[in-house]
Structures are given as structure tokens and as C-alpha cells.
Length: 341
Ligand code: KG4
Ligand code: ZN
Image (cartoon, rainbow, N blue to C red; front, side, top):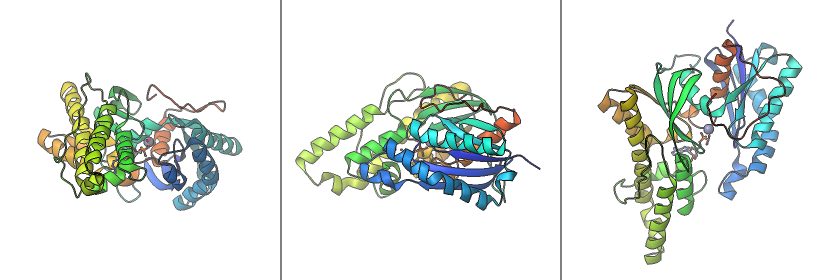
């Protein structure tokens, strides 16, 4: 029988557990934490407490949904980092307790690598399309924005990344300025559908090579609104659709320009998208169009695998299991990680 892995993800504000058998996903349970909404962002201490409350029922449901028992699990994979330390501690401690009790191995996983690995998952009733090596992955989330050159499952190189804010952060911070709820990315995505993407122009960064910068865009957006609101206090309300569409359009143009540059230089035709911002409908559409024009094979993750989930950790764990790459019991979570290891 194929190897069965329980994956646990608790790096930020989603508590998730998933079961894979080989690369086939049997279950994927995600408990979102609404407690942060009223604070306009994730409050680390509240996140750890909510993980603590959620972890047992979430793992329990993942096992039930997969129709397996703990005795069927060959190893437990967990997110070691990057992320919020208190959040990571809940998942890693739980994995330690469970693997010790069941006398099975434990596997540490990198959260960012996990986002990329969703491209190797399959569903119970169907195989999903997988990119071929080498491919480029545009990894866009709330904490990271990177172009990753994926040469093999565990041979990856970050060829470009943001020097300041992440793309998701740009969405979330600009949403906050407009008085929209957190997280702002999905709200802007929705409102953008009713607006004109060319209505307003915002500053685009000038950074070398394949790196990104989003803090200038955020400032340009903030000053633009400040000046317009001084003339008309209802400016945001009257122009919400156009503001969201123009902002989203600018973020997408910035993201794609560097991706195109890297794909050309490395002569790569398989291009994948991953991370929370890969749920953005404008970005998905723009990348698909770009791919058609440039004869790329474009891989867009199913929506349920875009934001944080444990399926990505479970499948990473499966490939690590095949390499006998297990973690020691004294392993500690890490909030920052320079490599994709
Ligand atoms: O990958 P993720 O769930 O968590 C991190 O690892 O950061 O990404 C969360 C980010 C947030 O910034 C959120 O606003 C953004 O993904 N996001 C979106 C959309 N859905 C989620 N951004 C733009 N459009 C969306 N539809
Ligand atoms: Zn993430």
C-alpha cells in the first residue's frame, strides 16, 4: 500500500490538517480564524491560542474525512517555518506528541516549498496537471513574493524576491487605507471586477534583475487617496471599483514583468503560480493570456490550494518520506527561513 502521511499546517492564522496517500489527497480540513478580522490583521498571540483550540478537532476531522485511523498514518509532516513562532509551535509540538505516541517518524516542511508542491497533488477521482522540471513558480502570498526556479522536488532556487513588502501585503495594506476589511486581497479582487483598470495610475518600482518592491506602490496609493479625499471626502466610496481595478492591474503588471524577464532569460516554458495571491482572478487571467501569447504551459492551482492549507505540507512530507528525510525530536520551529531547503 502507498505511504499515508498526515500533514499539519499552522504557520499563520489557519489551522489545517490533511491526509495524502502517495500524492493523492484524501482530506484537507482548514479552520480559519475570524478573531483577527476586527483588528485589521493577524494578532500573533490570538493566532496561537486559536491554533491550540483548533488543532485537535481539525486533525480528528481530517482523519475521519480521509476514512483512516491514526494506525494507518506512516508519518506526520508539519510546517517548521517560516511563520509566526507561537503558531508554528502549536503544530510542531502536536506533531512531536503524536509521532512519539505512535512511534512513527516526523517530517519538517518549509511552508513556501509547500505552496509550490501543491502542483504535484492529485485528487481521489482524477489526476491533476503537473508542471515538468525545470519550471518557474511565481510564489505570491501575504508574507512572500518570489520567482522560484524549480529544477526538481527539492532542488529549487529563488531567482528573484521582494526587497520589502509582499504582493499580498500590498493588497491588504491598500485595502486598509480604503477602509475595506482584512484580508483585503479577496475584497479588492471582487470589487475590481466592477471597475476600470486604467482609471488611475500608480507608481511602479524600479529594482534590478528579478526582484520586486511593493512599498512604493503602497505609498503612492496612500498619497493619491490623501490628496483626492482632501478635495472630496466621498472620493473612495464613489470610486471604489476603479481604485481596486487600477491597483490590482498595477500589482499584476509588476508581477508579470519580472516573471516574463526570468522565463526569457532561463528559457523556461512551464510556468506555475502559487500562494494566497494566486487566488486573484485578475492575476490568473493575465497569466493565462500571457502564457497563450508566449506558448507557455501555465499551471494555476485549484482555488482550495491557493491560500494556506495542510495538503501542501502532506504532499511535501510524502516526497521527503521517499528520501528518508526525517526530523529529530529536538527540532525547533523557525520564524524566518532564507532557503527553501
Ligand atoms: O498564502 P497565504 O494564505 O498566507 C501566507 O503565507 O501569507 O496568503 C494570504 C494572502 C493575503 O495577503 C490575502 O489578501 C491574499 O493572500 N489573497 C488574495 C486573494 N486571496 C487571498 N490576494 C488577492 N486576490 C485574492 N483573491
Ligand atoms: Zn502561505
